[in-house]
Image 1 (cartoon, rainbow, N blue to C red):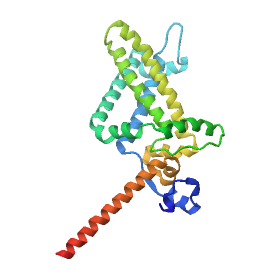
Image 2 (image 1 turned 30 degrees about the vertical axis):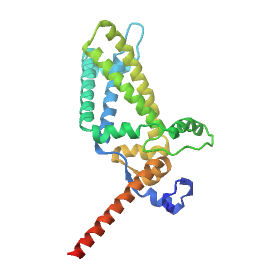
Image 3 (image 1 turned 120 degrees about the vertical axis):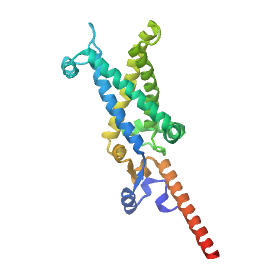
Image 4 (image 1 turned 180 degrees about the vertical axis):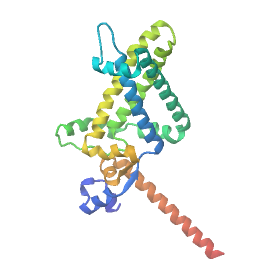
Amino acid sequence: MSRAHRPNPESLSVAERAAMAGRQLKRHDVAAILLHWFNALVWLVELATGVALITGARYVLAPAWFRDILLGLFGSGANMLRVHVVVGVSWIVILVIYGLFGFQTYLLSFVRDDLRLDRDDILWLKNKPLRILGRDVPLPEQGVYNAGQKAYAWVTVIGVAAIIGSGLVMAFHLGPPWLIQWAIPVHFVAVGAVVLGLIVHVYMAGVLPEERPAFFSMFNGKVNELYAYEFHTKWWRRRKQDEQRFRQQLAQEDAAGDQKSSDT
């Protein structure tokens, strides 16, 4: 393995680090980026309207000024509820379309490979909080997503399934009364779990300097090679191996072409 392919980030020279920081690796496809920001917009609308709709004689989740703003925007609570349902159903339709047409290209490899937790991920989940608290403990190598991102993704997958199922039951009164009643707390708990993970996700991606390249990759689809090397070493190594095999294939094809030309 050459010096540039060493697995220890601390062993890089200043020149090597500068060179790797200037090279970009593709991390996200356009479809994934568009879905990410579509989800962000949907969640913004659904959270705002959902929180404003939760009112009762003994409880009010949103402050009065916030609810007044949304009531003024939508005209009435009934209109706000309609928007909440329409946006939610539209979100479901887009997710279904994405799942049907992107199953082989995106979803299958994402769930089977990218979200699979291994021993290194378990150790990462154990040691990462200790490092945040100042303990000098090692973090194992990670793939295209670290263990924290994988854990949040699984919470989101399970939570979204619960949100969709309970939301449809509530919106269209599907099933017997007891099912509709149970759908309400299931919906609230699932939304709460995803939102808690979302807060951590936004903090990690938008606030921590070390994760800033991951944040910007949701705009341009790329991260610099140094970031990939230091924080997603397994994925970086796999990309390098793929590149090496590609170059070898091109060299073999060129050699075969040259041989064919010389024979003729």
